[in-house]
Amino acid sequence: MDDFLAARLQMAFSLGFHIVFACIGMVMPFFMSLAHFYWLKTGKTVYRDVTKAWSAGVAIFFATGAVSGTVLSFELGLLWPKFMEHAGPIFGMPFSLEGTAFFIEAIALGFYLYGWNKLNPWFHWATGVVVGISGLLSGILVVAANAWMNSPAGFDFIDGQYLNIDPVKAMFNDAWFSQALHMTVAAFVSTGFAVAGIHALMILKGKNIAFHSTAFKIAAIFATVAACLQPLSGDISAKDVAKRQPAKLAAMEAHFHTERNAPLIIGGIPDTARKTVDYAIRIPGLLSFMTTGDFNGEVKGLDSIPKEDQPPVAVTHYAFQIMVGLGMAMVGLALLYFLALWKKTNWLKSNWLLKLFVLATPMGFIALEAGWTVTEVGRQPWIIHGVMRTADAVTPMPGIAYSFYLFTGVYISLAVIVILLLYRQITMVGKIYDSSSKVPKS
Figure: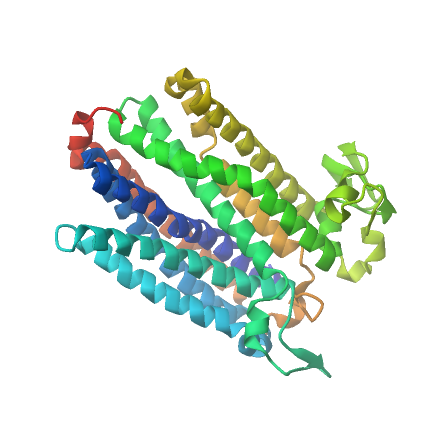
């Protein structure tokens, strides 16, 4: 394995690992705070028990996210020194602010975890809300930094020098809003379906029904509402990509030829040699309408992009199709759940609906990883779009392959530990919070 490939794989693996824990850390505090709010308003102990159980999960994911995020910051300097040398002064502000948000989150989490029966009940609840808000801000700020890589702003690039640097303009670049919105909603979708699926499984097993039914309802509402909002944020994001990164859009859609009335391609196997997509479903004019608002609008294809600037088509296209396909499957499940709440209340007690949520448990995170792949692979060969190539930013230090193997081992070990801790937490819930089994379903 050459060093360039090893550096890219290590960064991809680290980001892919961290993004899961980061998203859970952004969202779970809101689940926890809502359950806590219901406990304070109703006095039903089942809500207290759900709150305490989820707070333990928040602590686990906070610690894991902190460790994996710290490793990422070191990897940026270790693997991409040329990138950090030039980009650090420009997009350093969101990272600095993210550090501030992280410290606030850590302090608030400390108050929350150790504040039971010691703090004013509503002040205690407020510290949990602060955990959620600061965690959400941390994620948005990191996404702003990544958005800058897709839409560089806040500097003038003259004769190889970065001049007239404006960190505020760099942070609020053209891509930050669409990326932050899409990523935030994705975090709620993925975490919501994962949490709802786990509790649905426990209900099917007949364990602590009242506890898991209460937890399921909260997570399912977050997940289904977010799932229905995600296509809207995706449309905003796609229009933005079409405007700023036509090469990425062309790779996402495997759109080889510039044309009007461009069809939307669903599925298919791209053949880059023949510049065709086999076995695809084509909807005439829909891609033109989605990107330009006109069924006859022109959509740039890969033939308008120099070959050396084209992203890997197959990986980007397949990742995009996986993201969209799983996203629509979750929208379908969300609509079923809303129908059950509105008209078919008997469905809410049916095993088949719970089984669908169990099947959806990993869908959000698979879609999340696929979407992140689209964002990063679709930007290639650029690490800073249109300014610096990835190959020019990598470290000249030999032996990066060994670093890749080492970090991969560390991350796998960490993942195993987290899974064991969560499994222990879930299976012991009935023993620790046995009061839930004595409370009728709310």
